[in-house]
Image 1 (cartoon, rainbow, N blue to C red):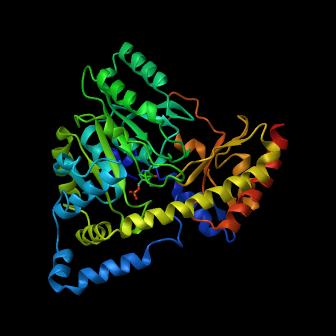
Image 2 (cartoon, helix red, strand yellow):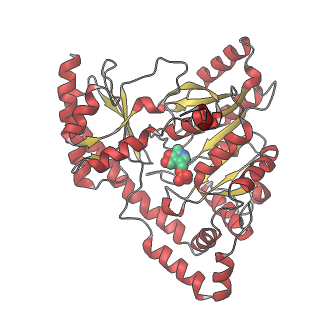
Image 3 (spheres, helix red, strand yellow):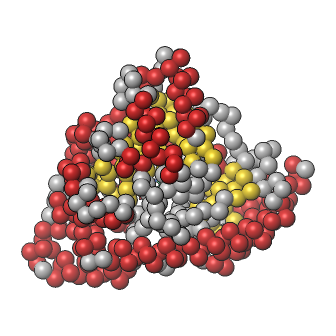
Length: 428
Ligand SMILES: Cc1ncc(COP(=O)(O)O)c(C=O)c1O
C-alpha cells in the first residue's frame, strides 16, 4: 500500500480475525470434524416458532407494514418492555422489579454490537481494559481496534481471581496508570472459551472492587452474559449486574444468539446513565436502530412463551451433547490424564483443554497440524489471551460441542487423542 492509500489508524491496527483462517480450513478440508466454530446446534434452531411469528406479523397488513418500517435507535418500546420482563424472570426477580431500567435498555444487533459500541464510547488509545485470562477472542479484536492497553487477569475454576485483580490495580496505581483503567470485562456464565462461570461469591465483591478503585475515574464492569440461560442442572445465580442496584458501574450485555438464533442477530444492553447517550449517539451514526422486523418477531415469541419453551428444550440438547463430548474425552484422552486435562462445563458450549506446557497448540505447532491430518479442528488457546502480562500460554485449546452430532463428537475426541498421542511422544 502506498502512502496515498493509507487507511485510518484504527483499521491499520486491526489484525484479520484469527478464526476466519480456521473456518476456511474447515471448509477446504472435506471430512474434517470442526470442534472450532462457536456455532449453535443446527438441528434445534427454532424454524417452526419463527415461521409462526413471521406469518402472524404479516397476516395483519398494518402490523406488517409497521414491522417493515424503520424503528428507533434505542429500540422498540414494546420489545424493550418484554426484554425487561424476560430479564426479571431470568434473574428470578419480582415482576416489575426492573421497570426502572427500561429507559437505559438499548436494543443492539447481537451483543457484539454492544461490546463494540461500549468500547468506542469509552476507550481512547492507551486506555486500560482488564480482561479474564483467557477471554473471548473476538473482544480482544475489538480492543485492538480501539488501541486499548489490555491486561489479562488470571482465572481459576471459579472465574476471575479477585486477588489478582486487586494486585494488578495496586501495581497500576504505583505506576501512575490507575487513571487510564476504564473497564473490567467478564464473561460471567459458561465463559467462551473455558466454560467456567464466575462464582456467585465473587460477583458482589467484583462490583465492590471496581467501585473502590474508581478513585481517579469510574471503572466500569462489562458483564457479557452471552451464555446465560444455557445452564444444565441448576438455576443461574443473580448476574453481576444485580449487585449494582445503583446502576452506575455494571454494563449488562445479553443476546438471543445462543439461546434462540444467531441468524436473528438480536441483543441488548443495560447501560449506566453516563454511557447511555454516548452509545446511542454512536449507534445513531452506525445504523440508527437494529432490525425493526426482528424486534417485532422476538417481542411476539417472548410474549407467547415460545422463547422460554425453546430455551428449556435447548438446555436438554446441550446437556446431552456436553455429556457425549466429556465422556468421549474421558474415554479417549483418559490414558493421558496425568498430563492432559479438560473442563467439565455445567452449561454453555465449550470445553477447555490443557496439554503439557511444552506442547504448542498454535497453528504452527505440532498438535494443530497433526489434528488436521487426523481430521479434527480446534481453536488454539493462545488466541484467547491478552499479550500482557505474558508469556502467552500456548498449551490450551477450545473445543465447541455446539455443531457436531453425537457421532462426530465421539469421533472428534478419538481423532484428537490420536494426534495428541503422537505429540506426547515428541514432548516426552
Ligand atoms: C462471549 C461472547 N460474547 C458475545 C458474542 C457475540 O454474539 P452475538 O453478537 O451474536 O450476540 C459471542 C459470540 O460467540 C460470545 O461468545
